[in-house]
Structures are given as structure tokens and as C-alpha cells.
Amino acid sequence: MRRFDTLFVRLLLAQLVTAVVLLSGFGFFFYTERSRTVARLVAERWAPALRAAAGEPVDAGAAVPLLQSASELPARAVHSPALAPRIAELRADLLAQGVPVQGVALSRGADNPVVWIALPAAGGSQRWFGLTDELIEPRLPQRMLVAQLLALAVVAGISWVVARHLTRPLDRLRQRLLTHAPGSDIAAPAEPAAAAPTAEIAAIEAAFSALRERLARHERERRLMLAGVSHDLRSPLARIRMAAELLPDDPALQARRDGIVRNVDVVDRLVQSFVDHLRAAELPLDETVDLAALARAAAAGLLRPAGELQLDLPPALPLPHANRLLLERVLHNLLDNAFKHGRPPVRLTLAATAGEAFIAVQDAGAGIAPEQQAHLLQAFARGEASRGVPGTGLGLAIVAEVVARLGGRIDCDTAPGAAVVRVRLPLRASA
Image (cartoon, rainbow, N blue to C red; front, side, top):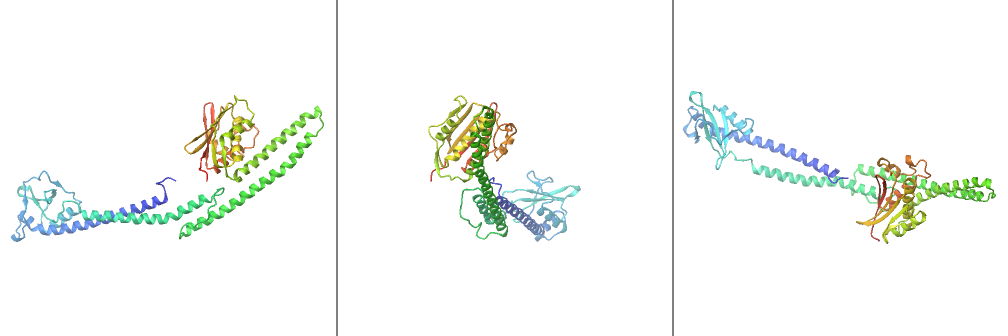
């Protein structure tokens, strides 16, 4: 799971976006209403003086000092947008009070901004009059912006707490599912998903527990069946082999006797593969195994010429929390698979880097196509190129299961004239 693609982040972002939208909307409407109120007050104070400037008689005591300019708008002044709430309300109020406003502009002064009002003049022209008022703010109200930022910070904190409270039970449930997954060697005591799990989380956990129990029961039954079949086959196979070897030493019967023994050996190897498959999930991981010594023994057991099998091994490579029989089967299956389905020379390499034991078996064959790699790591799976080669389809499956139990990973790589199967196993410190 990616770090920023989690339910916690999505909940937090959803709440923050909602808070930003609500606060922005509230700020907009508050500022609009406030601007209209200020515009009404300013229009009421300025209307008498502006009417006087337009040539209408007004009370002398009501006049407000005006900054008269030339007939053209000052260079520093800019026309205000007609839709600006404060300007639109000011213009509407001035017109309602009899001031013939023809235009509104704004310029920044040293202290306060100056609002320029265009009034009609003689000859059909217009004249601009500048007014200042303490009610006209030079910039957006800072206190409102600060209040909004503080409110957003408070909402962000509350959203973080709420999102964490909602997602923590799911995270704990996920940890429990990983800890108690079928086939896991870890037997941690059961813990509640949360102090007060919701009904949905409790239902998910109950469903998973039921599914885990069914899978464990099916797995036990499957292993018991394989073990029973393997055990029951060994006795008749031994009797068939003994009977074949007791046949008269007649040249006419020699070919048939050899055929019987050869087929018995094939079935015996198949049974042994079943046993190895069972052991891969059952044997304890309580030994420290020297991988280098085990690799030398596995290579010697194949009885291959020196030119067909090349070794690149360190003097020693101890692997803690492992099992000698399982690692022996991994090395044997990798080498046997390379000779059966590849071409010599085969090269076995061992190394230790960055806390990992590295096993690589390379041959000169065509290798495994990328789209078939996942399939061929399953039990009884065989590729098209290996249909005519004797085998059970359990070799790489046993390797994959042992590697998974040891906490490692397996991958295949194919290059022109070279096929490599790599296994990486963690070098965990001994307990």
C-alpha cells in the first residue's frame, strides 16, 4: 500500500477540502455583506457633497472636502470592477440618493485609498472627484484572514484525530489478518481490533476468522490425504520392485524387468515429491545451516562432469532460522530443473549482500517466459517446453514454498543464451 493512498489520507483530505470550501464560502458572504454595509454608510456621508459638486443645492454643513482633479482620471487610478460588492453597492446607493454617478475608480494613497467618482460636467463632459474615508480599507481585512486560517488549523487538527480514530481499527485488523494468515508460522495471541470496534469491522473479522478456519481445515485434510497416499504407495512399490528383481535371470526377460524397475523408480520419485511438498510447510525452522557446504554436497550428489556444473561459492555462508532438509531440497531442485529444462553449463552462485543470502542458478537454456513465471511456481504446473521431460511439476513449487516460509523471494530472468533463477533469503540474526 502506497503511503499517500490510504483511507486515513483520503478521509483527512476530504474533511480538509470540505472545511476549506465552507470557510471560503462563509468568508465570501461575510465580506460581501460587510462591504455592502460599509458602502451604504459611505454613500450616506458622501451624497450631499457629491450632489453639491454636481450643481445641486445642499446644506453647507453636510459637505465633505473633495479632492478635485482635472477632467481626466489620474494616472494612478484604476476603474473598479462593476461587480465588486462594495463598489456596486456604493454606486447604487449614490444613484438612489440623487447623485448622477457616471463612473467609479480607485487609487492607492499614502495613508488611505482615494475613491474617484465621475460626475457630469458642462458641455456633456465629466469631471472626477476624489474622496477619502476611514471606512474604506486599503486592503483585505487581515483579521478575517487570520481568523479563517486559525479556524482551518483547528479543523485540520480535529480532522486528523477523527480520521485516525476511524482508520486505526482497520489498520489493527489488517495487522491481525497478516499475522494470522493461513500458512503463517507466527502464532501471536489474538487481540481485539480496537477498544470499541464498529459493527462493520467486527463482521469483517468474524468472516475472516471463519474463512481462515475453513482453509486451515482443508489444508490439514489435503496434507493428510497426500501423506496417506504417499505412505500407502510405498509398500506396493517396494513389493513390485522386489518381485521384478526376483524374476529369472533370463536375457528374454531382462528388458521387461528393467522397464518395471524404471517405472517403479519414476513413481517412487513422484511419491518423494509429494513428501517433499508436505515437508516444505511442516518442518521446523530451528537450525543454522551452512549454505556453502550444503551447495557443495548437492553439486557432488548430481555426479555431473566438471565442465557441466560450475560453482562460485564462498568458504561458508551460515543461514540462521532455517532447516537443512528444506534448503537441501531447494538447491537440488534448482540444479535438477536447470539440467532438465535448460542446457549446460550450469553455474551455481552463492553470495551474501545487504543482509541477504543470494542463490543464483544459471544455465544456457531458453529460460522461463515472463508471463509463465507465476504459473510455473504453482504445484503441478508445467510449461509447454517440458511436456516431454519426465517430472511432477513440483520442483519449483517446493522451492517457492520454502523460500516463502523463510521470508525470501524468488525471481527468474532470461537473457540471450542465459536463463537465471535467483533466490534471496534474509540473514536474520540468531535468537
